[in-house]
Length: 361
Ligand SMILES: *Cc1c(COP(=O)(O)O)cnc(C)c1O
Image (cartoon, rainbow, N blue to C red; front, side, top):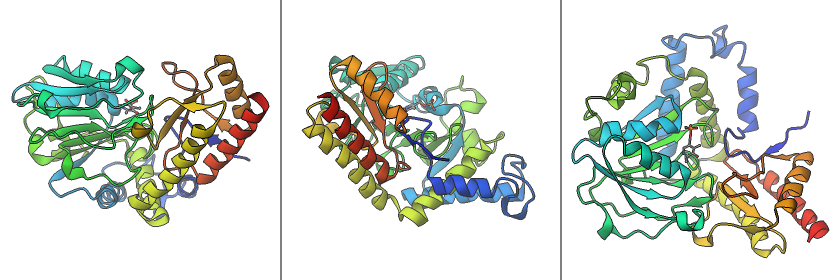
């Protein structure tokens, strides 16, 4: 059976070696006589899985000891409420940069629980750039400053972090987590849905500085309180057991097969570089994002003609390059090339695009 090259923005590709290992361990995980899907989350064998997953994440990302790692459910979207409920508790204010739909949702949700300020937006040009930020315009006594680091739909990324001083920086890193090194100590809180670059859907990782835990608003539901999950080692209730297990396998792959996040970044730069280089020289296709803010993970592009776009997506799908249709708000195409997309997948896509260009330019 041939596997396709899947350019989906999420859920997305997983490393083939991870899928094979999961298949091998499906019926009998390490001599337990059960699959990981069936075992009690309170069992010794499962306890080892979740502890190894956390230890690997700490090691691979270099997470400092004064940060908690939480494995939660409810998607990154639940964090849009969970962050303000837990953090918007001193001045009750927070700052937001509007760089796309996810950033907008985070802002709108926070506005229900406190005073949410927009400090900058790139909506004027369909979020095709990261707006310049002037620290003089930031709210001095804000409880946190929120950014969406990699904008999955629009294909932009922050190459430089905002200078927020003592105000904790909070970032949605759903679509760039584990794509390269990140200095966790620069952030108060990081969160990421697993289904882009870490594991299948069903889990959200929260990495939060310890001093930000324990001040939740009184109305905070128990399940939305970071303290509850931190005190219970992400086992207050049943965690997303199988997703955590796959995340463990992905982290082992990152550590042992790839050799860590610096190597991963080099591979990601190579893959994105090939596609951007082609787009910059193409007579038919062009990228939609300003070059300085381009993402390594999500690369939107268009021909400028909707019929040609549709023809391209159709022919690409038939050739085994699937999920290339762009988000409805941008149109055209989008190639999401997360960690698990092999270099060969991008090489073959570029060759296919060249061929299509010759026939259709
Ligand atoms: C996909 C995505 C989300 C939404 O994640 P869910 O897990 O579906 O709630 C939020 N933010 C970013 C940046 C995303 O890419």
